[in-house]
Image 1: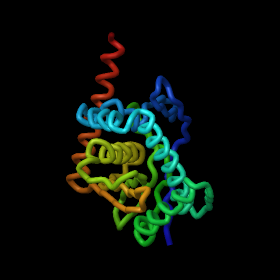
Image 2: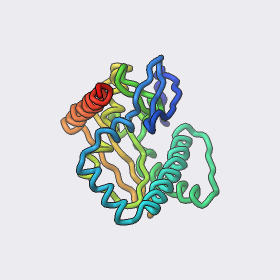
Image 3: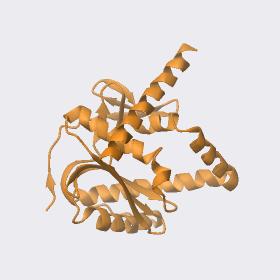
Length: 232
């Protein structure tokens, strides 16, 4: 039996301004977590992405990106409805793939491991700094955990995720802590590839504390760069 603990999450409207996602929460217009990550990614990561685009071609790169995004949206909806005990059925070709991926994810990551739900797709905001929407917060493996579900074209390695997924989880945790005063000491990604390979990567203890420090540095970098642009 999965228990539910209620938190007073805010409502939000979301829009895109100059290609950047912005959340309007509690009267504040805040940049999204993904906007901050994109604006502050390392030069090394940018170079790797550009090299990949040149290798496969711009048109094919866009197609791969869009297919992954569409598949991920359906996967998230199915997993969300599974946790909340509602139904979602998508019989399109993409939907059938997403259903198979979701079955693997829920069996491996949710069943027998999630004991208490604190939020499913909740809006989170760190006052004055940023906002976002994470997939799941709750008691997972007996620990307060912020969880994010991912779909991927190929398997990942943990060291590849330090600049992105790790920081993303840390930002969500920081926002939750700012809102409710509950400390989150663990973040975890559940990943299923389109070839049905399951992976999970977690950060906790000192590793997750360091992730939070690094995340706040990224936020500081984002606003420093923004101020420089506004001064020009």
